[in-house]
View (tube, helix red, strand yellow):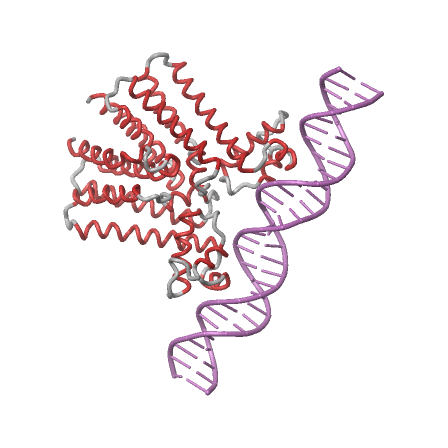
Length: 193
Length: 193
DNA sequence: GCTGGAAGTTACAGACCGGTAACACCCTAG
DNA sequence: CTAGGGTGTTACCGGTCTGTAACTTCCAGC
């Protein structure tokens, strides 16, 4: 039973992809390595030949998520070359898509909640990605000609972060449903200053 | 070793209080019942005489958290009787205090992240509390004479929720540091309409 | 002082966890 | 054909998890 994600590709890739999916759906502590390897159509030994521990697998999953996120930013630039304001609106649009599905929120944020040990290796990756995202959004706001770029970027960040976690508590019909409206009106308001 | 929280009081209360504290610090799945009872200066049998399962203990902890939260709202009314706008500012102030400590965020939201089973008994409690909080904040905004009360309340909710989870990813010096500024300027902006 | 119930103690069941050892297998590169 | 690396299989280790059984101890109310 190769189960879903697991076509014929290299075991390492299958494990990584399956782990990302299962961590997202069931939480990191809610999934054992046995379950991952079984769903990936392989076995525990193979996992431990490619990853030296579950913690390292977690880190690698988060890195993969970070790489995916990075690609989205390239897409903004590719679709609206030079037009930073359009890219900012594209960011809002993309963010709202994350809220429409029944997604379980941001893998990074969720991992930060689950992995309470302050020295867990995953914490570095989480912090790095979140800071990179912040810098990108600040740059986008600044280059779009907005005065208080940092403040707008941080506000938008918190709104999205809040919307993604709120969905998990009260569902998509809660406060997160108003995200686009909030974000767009904020942008308009900052532009008017 | 009665350890911190556990003075001489009824075992049930000690267990409840200790569990709340440990769940908050180490996460729900990161703490076993043995560790809780030991820290509470009692033993596992006593725990299972008062709570029929760990899941029920979790639910009871969240209910206690909800009760605490409810008391805070009474405090707003007591300190600024009738003055809804002052109460709204008190809410912002209180919210910011939650961000200054090295707290691990909102127990409800964290539980929603950790307990991925959609039919987990705790989910009802989480949703109920979050919806109650939302209604209270909406009422506060409306009674403070703000036009788009729901939208302001939802925006403030998402900002706080986002700030509390952002702290866990990037620390208190990240975007969450600007929470008060964002909230106050939002309130001012909504009042001006 | 006696009694009854709450609390503590010890031991255990059964499952699952992360991680490893030893060995058989297959498939491809030379 | 052959050699060797990647993979699969089975069994296991030691630890931890929730939850229970059987028994003892303590203490307050009568």
